[in-house]
Image 1 (cartoon, rainbow, N blue to C red):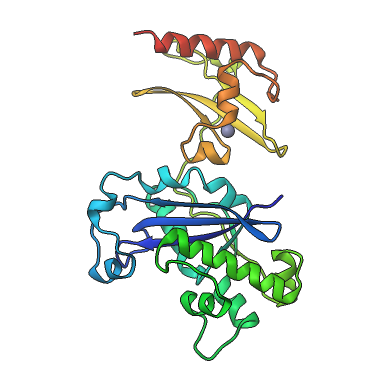
Image 2 (cartoon, rainbow, N blue to C red):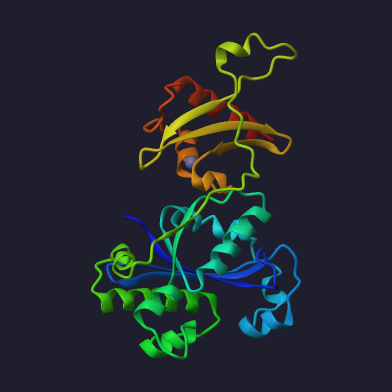
Length: 288
Ligand SMILES: [Zn+2]
């Protein structure tokens, strides 16, 4: 099932890549089913007084918090494969994209709907469709300008709109109010894809000192996608890179975890021997 989740960022200053807090709220079967919020350490600790006045977050609150990629790795698979809701979505989608780019990560294509536009169509009023105003009209109780609370209120607005229009889900709502889902295109590509290593046969033809053969694997993801896993020999040690969403954002993914324990259930490339070679090389590298 497509994840549907509301997203809200707070920023430290006027820059889109200065996120200092994120809130998320997932909806399913007509209700908010999960809520998360995290503080984020922005690239630098410059906080504008105006921004502090809005959200109350100060540098000391985020100094020891994880960075944007570290915080978002957990949520990006859902954001990238799902439908994102945000109140004034242009802002939050802009923060998401600018922050990924600032850290040299390639933004995937995100699909989203703006709940301001939903509210304008379903709950119009002279006072406007600011988050606080719409929430008050609908009787949604929340602490405005806390990222987690704002995301929750945004999700509740979408749910209220579905109930009001009788739409069975968010896609039905999109059709009913003629508000098409927007897709933010992929890229820009600041990250070089892992280079496909030469196969074992061409390795013999290489000149120079003989290096251990490069190890690469193709695995099948849970949705049938194919991912490439490559062993990289870096100055900092051996590292397995996977082209799946989690892998691209530098988190441990289950594909790598499976290979490391010799689980070849989803191995498509058929090089079972290399799985054992991989295990031996990782073991050797772990020796003191
Ligand atoms: Zn993976």
